[in-house]
Figure 1: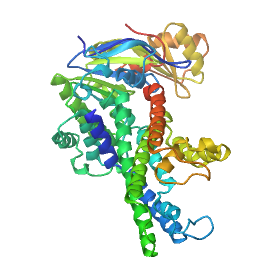
Figure 2: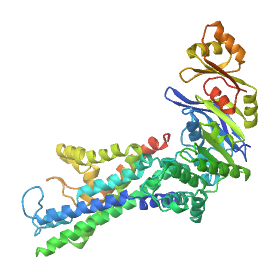
Figure 3: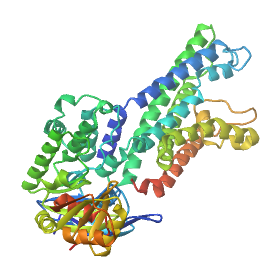
Figure 4: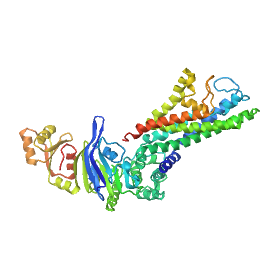
Length: 253
Length: 301
């Protein structure tokens, strides 16, 4: 397992795409934070509540959900990229136990995904606190609350990256798997959540976003921290299990 | 025990049979040519041998074990299956670092194999900018990284320039002379004829020849070949085939007949009023035998 993990970690370090994704995700988080925090207390789509309020401060430090979509795509790329570039052949020749390869990829992508989440949360928090303090407001959020959201974003991003590995292994086409991530996160969950408010908090992306501090629809409470972590981790494991039983062991032609 | 054994190896993709009932042994310290035209099933057979494709039936083993069960596969077997199996943004050195990490090899081995394949100066260039020949060399470096006992190479000469092909021949010969075992596929017999000890020929998924190169060459030397130019090539081919010869249409107006004398071919044409513009009698060479074997279903002993 050590060799498989070292190889996967080296693959991530020596490829440009993951770090390009990180840069885009962080830029997105930064622009999003500046745009919304500077419109705090205003009206329209790019505004949040006043930074003088607890809710406004919470919104200001919350990492945008799009970052979570990017980390899932990172996981997809880690797995499906092997088939896009034909490197799966070398990977499976060096480590014929494909379940071990899947596990190593999940751990490596999960670790980098968690770092994405931590960096995104750190950047958003720094920008949010700058606007709060710069606007002359007292910081109403406790250090524990801020830390909870940062830890939530880190865990959520790590688990979603691992889920992305499962999805990329299940759907070997990188384009199809990437489209599936965005359709699921931006269309399917939004639709289900809109139609069935009580089900909203049990949806994986919504649960991940709430872990990072995102506010759900009015009248809907987020899952407790541990329940949300368990839900996302279970979703990641379920996808990987299906992949392990089907496409992972399929012929590499 | 042979280094490589295939027994009744069969692979079907839906209704298409890619490999059928293939059995062969590859002895240690030899270079075996695994030949056949494109689509003959060579790559599928090699992928089954390497555990990448699940056989529909039969077994394929290396040192008596399926590849997936080998304790330290990269130290036992080095394989080149396709020259495009690289992440284009990664440098040659980093590609090998990944393989070394997976196989648990000393990183010092990376420079050794890069120099061995002549890629030392290009070690820190991204693979995306490599020519096909350079990618083949990197694929060979990958195969040699674990200093294996067995080399399994699928069309390794594709993309190599003449100097590269000669270098490859010398490398494979030296590898076998040091006790290593090589199974190398090609769709061109001439590409491997100077290197191999034994030839295995596959056609439409089935074994059509498995013999030492000398035996195949001896078979070739005893077979007359008559090349005819005629305006009724297909008619002459059918007539010659009906007489028990191996015959095939060659180009627009050519027919190649193996196994009949020039006189007999001339008589067949005369009996059917088939005009002959040119007739050349030769002794078959290895390439003719290969082409004959792979243009019919007939197996030779």
